[in-house]
Length: 126
Image 1 (cartoon, helix red, strand yellow):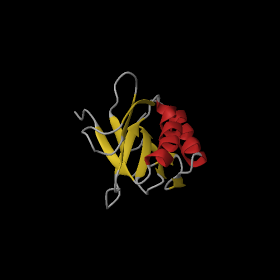
Image 2: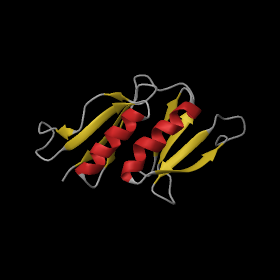
Image 3: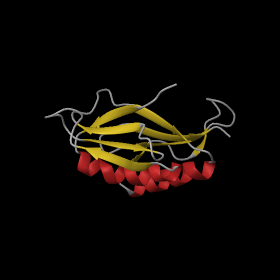
Image 4: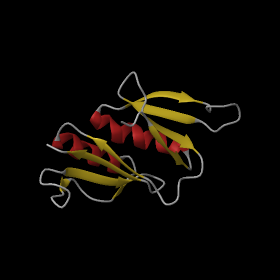
């Protein structure tokens, strides 16, 4: 089981509004912002379902190749909401909400490029 993960973004202040809007559909909130894990380190922001952050976004050179992160939704409506909110917050389409039966018959997901080009997905398996 994965406890937490994170990505780097080129402009944390630009990316925070995107992630706040996009992840709200699955109940994720910005839980904490810290200047850096160690003195002199760049700032990071922790998202998750309160009170535990499990997805970290840090200021730094974005990973190359870009990262794909998939978040689990409890309903297809949450997937639809994620997509609308992410696009409205500056994300770019990488796959509108819909069934992806080539993964499995009930795989319903949506994919959006974040401001740096990371592939962010929300998926419902129901």
